[in-house]
Image (cartoon, rainbow, N blue to C red; front, side, top):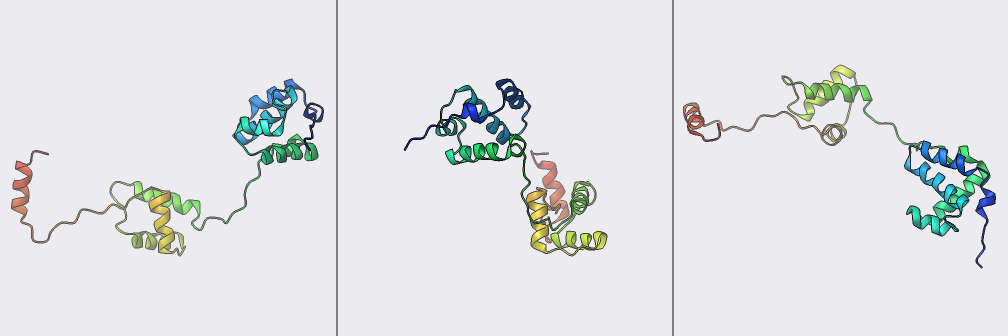
Length: 169
């Protein structure tokens, strides 16, 4: 049962309105939605499947857009909904404080436990080590400023002699 739908009649916007809307869109998803309406209005694409192939989305997605447009209108179609989610454990001002402290040349943190104590003292927030480590290491992409390990038994005179004769310096 191949049922043809005349989308040119269902879309009540003019081609000029669709063109201006298309040029005004900043998000890719809204641009694709307006592009769908434009292609169906002009007859460039005859079916939902054709539009879906051209846009690189699934046909049910295009069908859902068209259903939303016909039932709720253009304003609801172009509305970008924010996804609900759990708020971050570490407030933004604490993150900025840690980032500022890490970017200072003279002072830094030697361990994540030290960062944990610093946050506790300055912001009165108790954080798990794992949470803090993930934020600093992966989200801020920072590494702690720790010196290289050095042997206790090394001779300082031999070290200076080595540095003098080294080709690197």
